[in-house]
Image (tube, rainbow, N blue to C red):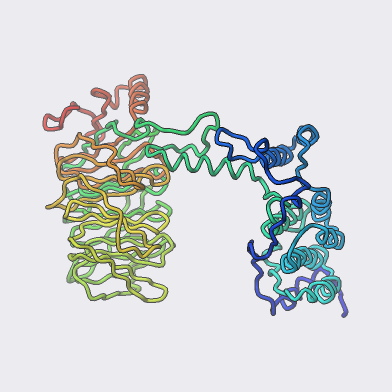
Length: 588
């Protein structure tokens, strides 16, 4: 073979070399390992009572010491780890295993394959798979790092092929892991982790085992804490984790009164920095979130001739759609408040709208029982005419593969745009609103039967999670996901209150008074777990936060300027100014 440039030719040829071989994904299997006898494990006998520890005597002392030693080594405390091994008499691993690890990390492939045969007892198939992974790494480093095509071919033919497992990983997955010493070390560490998945854990303890056990314990504590609602991801190891009710935003910290009529819809932007509201007064308002939870008006979007019932933020929050009640859909620039385009059909209006994740197209539900896909210039790209009643609400899943809609009946319809299929989820009562979780897995719907149902689309279950306690029978009431990891469900209600449930167990956690009319819609700030907003027929929007947050904001606003004023810690904003509490608002 004539090579004018080894590196260039290797890049040109490695795709052809690997074409016949599918991707290898070895998995740990108990069938690949013959269980050792007690005396074969690290030269120690079977566990006795003195080797057990903990209040319930469920922890083997030998295993406990070994994972502590491993953790010390991984943290860089080598002398301390060696001292633990010496003083306890419990080695982290057998000398042959230590030799094997060093040989793999040093790239001494022939020696590591030979040493592997000394680690045991292993079944032949386990040994072959581990040897294959080692030689595959050798092959990739020769081919990609060194550009040694002849050496890579020689390894393939004389070392890998005799194993009968010629299923190589494609080098494209290796290119990003190699090229410099640091990246090559990462690739070899990843190789050791794959080999560990094949070998029994008492021979090679899985990497970062103590960290994994601690993370598991913290996850269990966090899942068991029904009030957990913190933006902080780290939990303390010093005490068991338990949050109180004070982590739930239950205090009205601000009342917005810029709308002249009922407020029907509101939604925070995806970055949490803005809030948009839609009203029966034929306007929408873009609010700006400043100083944690203080909200001020930024733009009033006027131009609709009928009530505005729906808003939708673009994926990058640079644009927003507003939908009039059976009227046109308008596209606005959120920075300037300028209307960029009006989308309309001559004979009918629209009822709802939702963006596709590309930010260049969106879908509208229309009064003619059709769905239309548009681009930003106003071109009508597609029309779907499903056999169903008038569409009243719709959403697009975050991956853009499904359009979910509800109609004036008892069905949730999921249209898969990739395979052109339709799935129908049947309810027993009429549905009034729809919300999709950020991961696209869960559907949340409000029913006129005074229930909220949560459907898990991944399970295809016929039995949803149910949330009860609020009042709904005459009007469109909307709910949403909220809080840290979407741990809560929050909804409006016809009894003028806001209801909060724990999503996992369905427990009703809070009932919040404050509004003096039906609460039509709620929206939780996606970047601030301690902030949500509610919209009501009493013409107001309430911003909810923590008690401490309210006091801090009140002190800041009082010290800074007379605007906004506060009344009992609650700011009332009217057309950008302030005034006292309205008489028809409920006292606290």
